[in-house]
Image (cartoon, rainbow, N blue to C red; front, side, top):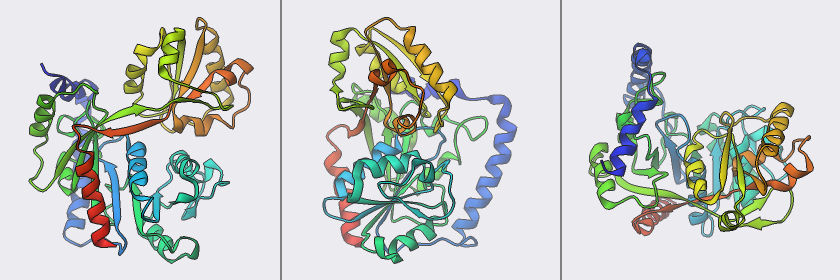
Length: 367
């Protein structure tokens, strides 16, 4: 079996057939809601600004954050970009514009990460009401220079109609092989993908073959106007969370270091697999997605580190770093050993030029 077939069919290992009756009821509700939007019974707003939505059909990680960062790097040199998110699990309500000193808890970990990474190059705002959020971005004096809005995780937010919809799906869990919640992980039926202009299959192995890609394209049965791309993860230099030291993964391999992988993300398996060739031993320590770490978690991390043979290192994600850096109780060794692994996405098969053209043409034609 080709690798793409293996990825596609592996999703069935994570489904729960006994919950299918509940999935059917959930699907009825989603179908009614979507039909009300399709028929205009429920109001949809079309922003006057170029608006790009990056989202998915499933719960869990498909790599939205690094793909939004890809768009920021592409567009921010020429346009004033604003990123609008609902600010998942934030401890605030309504519209809030992020500044460099805004506490992470007020806007959520991913928006905070974006603001810290790109600073004043972009506006970052949060609002569960996306139409209201875009209105504030346009009308408020501080953000009235916005030229492009990036909507993070808004594919199911039908109250707003983005001009360009980019749908992401994990290579290891294609939507055509998944089931609706709660039996599977789909937020809505797979036919919802028809609303997408661009589909990106994410987290692909670097050695995925053209035949693998053709198999996936056939299984997805996209419409003629939809453009399909494949992306993979690339890792930058490890950066010390408490200090200025940096390392490469090759240095970890040379040192024969043991790795404690601390993650609070939806899908840490791919990162674990990617790091395994560089570590003499890797010990995953997963927490729930968007997890707020506690004093007990800190003790658990320190204790887990002490059980590993030396030399040893803690590696975590950029998203987790936003929630770890303010914690008290880390031992001196844990602080010195804690490194953040930045990731980027790379569009495969030399198709990045085509994707960039689609995005830039849309923004230019609608500015």
